[in-house]
Image (cartoon, rainbow, N blue to C red; front, side, top):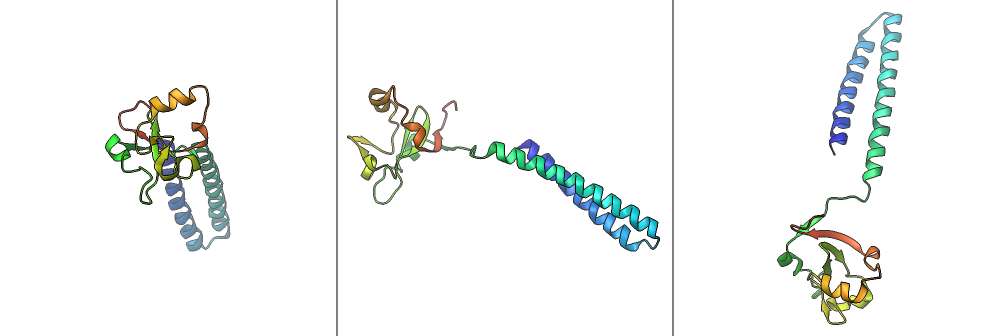
Length: 146
């Protein structure tokens, strides 16, 4: 995030410089002076292009790495899949959305209820299977070390 803020400042500085150069080019009567300012504008645009490319690379690297919402267990309880609410479960400190998983219909999966930390139940039944990688991560449990 720090890199993006620095790039934003750099781009704002370049934009201001381009505005100044356009003004100077417009006000200058000398053809050589006009040519000089046009070249400086082109150089500034090239610099901005490189900064934009750098910003896009950073954004691409961070794609899908959004800040996780932190849930307390009390807040998680509100996502029990009943009455049209989403169904979330926590496993090993990570909160997953199971709303659209057919086997979690109505917020229940073989007697295990959504809106809770189901780490123990999950590990008993799925310790060697990675079923979680197919689920959308929506947050983490407050205080977990993720």
